[in-house]
Amino acid sequence: MAVNAARRARPLRVAGLVLALLIVALLGAALWLRSALAQAQSEADDREAAMRAAGTHALDLLSVGHRTVDSDIKRILDTSTGAARAEYARNVTTLKETTLRSKVLQTGALRASGLVSMKGNVARVMVVGDAVIRWEGSKQPPQERFYQWNMEVTKIGAAWLVSKTELVL
Image (cartoon, rainbow, N blue to C red; front, side, top):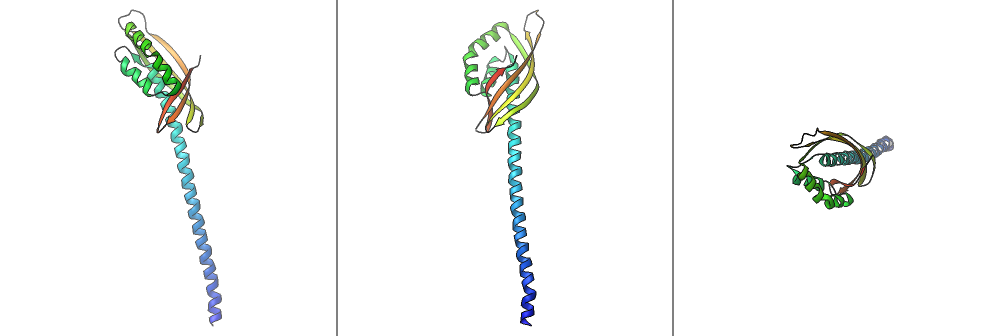
């Protein structure tokens, strides 16, 4: 009788062991899937943030007025880094003088942005926008101008900043 009981217990032990291994495998697969989904979401968030940063920067470039020129320039500098920021910093005085002297009121609109490529912390984004330029006190009619840029956007810490701009003609 003891032999029969041992024979009956063996399949239960094997079934229990198989069930335990199956649970461990399913748990491992669930953890791996969770990690893969978190990674995919993080990458999607980075793509969206890079495009948003390029679009915001383009809108800052397109929206400059003589009444708000100091804060407009600050926004341009705050959303840029590297070569782009250095170029803007070199041209601050000229931009400010021209804007004030001509009493420029430039209003921009972002029309489209799209991710061209992304590797690590650097993304290339194409941005399209336009601006209506008015001159306060002038009888000259407003001018509409259209722009298209290739922008390189770099992740610095948690922020995406424009590091290079290329105006596409």
